[in-house]
Every structure is written in C-alpha cells, then in structure tokens.
Image 1 (cartoon, rainbow, N blue to C red):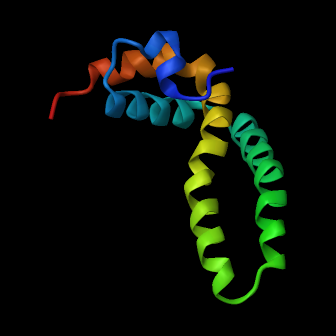
Image 2: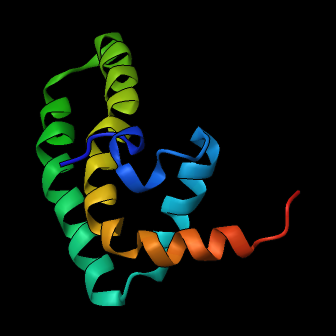
Length: 101
C-alpha cells in the first residue's frame, strides 16, 4: 500500500503538485458508493485519535491539537491513494488534456 504519492509507479514522472492534482481528479472520478466507503474508512481511522483528545484540558490541549492537525494528512493520504488508484489512468489522461497555466 502506497503511503505517499511518490510511491505510486504511475505518477513517478510527475512533479509533486501535479501528483496531487491527479489524485484530486481521480477522487472526483470516484462513484458515490466508493466516496462514501472512503469517508467511512477515514472516519473510523480518525475517530479514536480525536476522541482521545477529550482527556486533555486547558493549555495542554493546544500542542496536542497541533500534532493531531499535522498528522491528519499523514493518516488519511494512504486511504485516498488506495481508493483513487483504480482511477489514476483516467485522471492522468484528463490531467494531460488540461491546458497549461
């Protein structure tokens, strides 16, 4: 399972920003059922993390929220990549048809 877009073979020839644009296109191509399943998976992954934050109070919560906010994309990106993978070919074609600029 790819943890970052850099590990996806089909996207090796693209720059970092282009990879993210292709992932965005791939996710937009997903059918509604797949989008719902992906969001449920993300919710199941993130619920325990954010529920555990309820035990902290006052100023001690601030650095923990900062860390949780920074970890959010690291936790959810592999799920988005896994669900968007089957749409990468079509997303690459659509990306390459886009006008530059």
